[in-house]
Image (tube, rainbow, N blue to C red; front, side):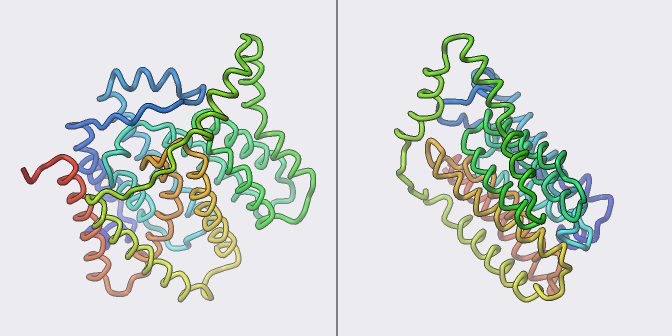
Length: 330
């Protein structure tokens, strides 16, 4: 069915994946879930006001951006040979996981920032065995800086970029300096703008310090997400087992890429600590590496019927969570 068709890299997948995404986003179009009001970063603040007044536009743009990011992620994975066998599975898994709850069906600042982080990931992976990587390192720094102006916790990916350079490159101290300088370009321009308008101190406290110091640290998993959490955990468990069992058969470049994706996941979870609350949109960054790891399981699964069953159960768990959220049973 779905898995067997999409992992065989058939052109029909380019139609099938957006259709699956559209079906999963239908609850967002029919019953838009407006996110809880938070303090927005400069590049998202005015957009946030518009999106709250035009919910259909927000859901539509969120859907289109998620599809674009899905195929961008798929391109990155195979362009840099993190997975050597071509398929559309990473795109499929991102489309499914990024639409697994109503809180993700919106043009969130995290989703926009994620597009720039994917660009930074692409430039960082491009540096592997490159004689000179100053341009790629600088570009990745700029993209991380822009992402932080949409969503502040993105700034932790500067540490991810540094770790990636350490993993992929020999020690060249100028690349470290260039990475840092690139990440400061966009924030410096923003800082100069607010300084000219005598708002720098106010913005620093309102946008950076207060949201972190007064954030909501309460975490509670609603009952409607129990089934979904169990299925996601099961999928991650079997995916991890598949990676460990096949670790010796991968090339050195693939191993380096896998290490980079592992650190992407670690820094994605770390970014949640800087978020203003535990809203579900905060996990978007983690969906990129999770989509990669889970797609590997489906790609190399020998028992196709088992892989199809796990995928269908994942879809079912999403449907159940929607049904409970929107009271479809009453």
